[in-house]
Length: 114
Ligand code: AMP
Ligand code: ZN
Image (cartoon, rainbow, N blue to C red; front, side, top):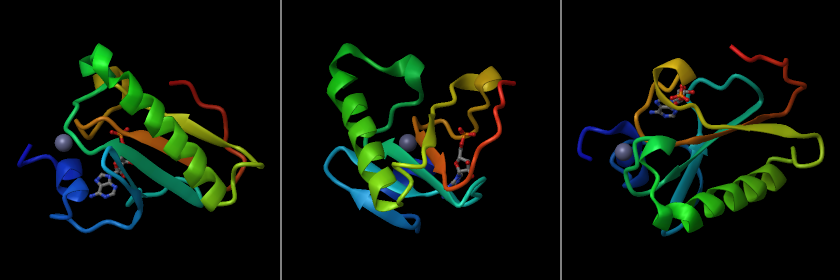
């Protein structure tokens, strides 16, 4: 998708602090971090949201969580803990229409549900 910000980050057309990249996913720092560690993990291919996932994407989604584990270890938050969040659609608060997994940690997070 030519106009999608996260597609541009995945292909290197837009700068970002990339922490990890392979043939399936890219992990980079959120530009407006809400905690000391705030990383986004995206599929390299454009998928709008969880709603657009297909049966064949199961391996990809599993891989996103395995990369989350790797990032948490790298960032030294695996032991202290962190949140893994995917927002979907308007009510879910999704502002970028390319699937992304937030990894947020480095401090005790307040509980928030809406
Ligand atoms: P969401 O509200 O779940 O759609 O989250 C979108 C996230 O993307 C927000 O936390 C933004 O700060 C982050 N974001 C948007 N544009 C960029 C960008 N160019 N580089 C890094 N993070 C971004
Ligand atoms: Zn995209």
